[in-house]
Image 1 (cartoon, one colour):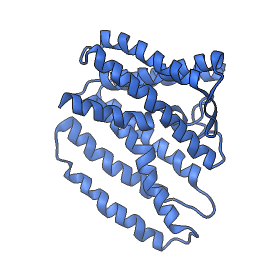
Image 2: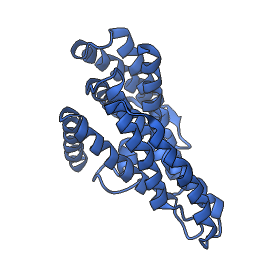
Image 3: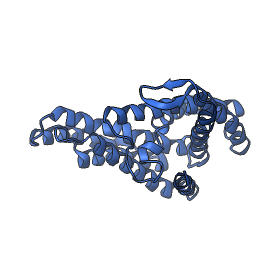
Image 4: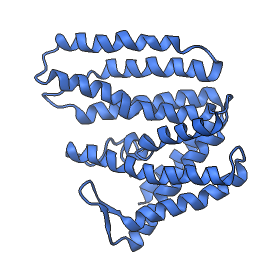
Length: 267
């Protein structure tokens, strides 16, 4: 528990610093996070019969991220993202020359790694540019809500959790913890709205509800992945927490939906 708390403290500090130090630092940090998450995913799904193309998958993810960065921060066209097309074609061609028993499984996992482990971080990154220029308040507020949901669910679930939420995928989660996490999110969102006034109270409350609800499903989805692969943690980079995917499981589904909500709201 002590190791988990220390790791969590330093991780929160590094995440917060990456946001407050400006667009360039945040861009680099999100790129590193997405690459580490993809590396964990490919390691998880690899087996003697299934061998995803890790290098090709990471190159494909970067070929999406860099044009996105140029578009969001500099207003440039997304035309460079067309490089993704020959890369996807190349993944199929390369697989023809590899001696893998389950070739199409390898292709599927290669492409799904980009969708599952990298794309959510791109939506999280795009939150910083949702109103045109760089603004750390949106991604920072979202992160604080994620942490509030995790903390509330853990504290209330540990003390009062009696009814299992989804025992098949996550035996420790309870309905009490689920509602405790959402309640924590809603309360923290009111504090956030006081300091980050780009949005009104009601919109921060809606974002909090999305984050708490969908973040839990993201957590369960990542647990479903690990259980289907008979593993406990996605990695060992963060002592006491597991890997990057373990720490950001709530972000995987919540960040895209929060981004969509803000796009519809602001535009």
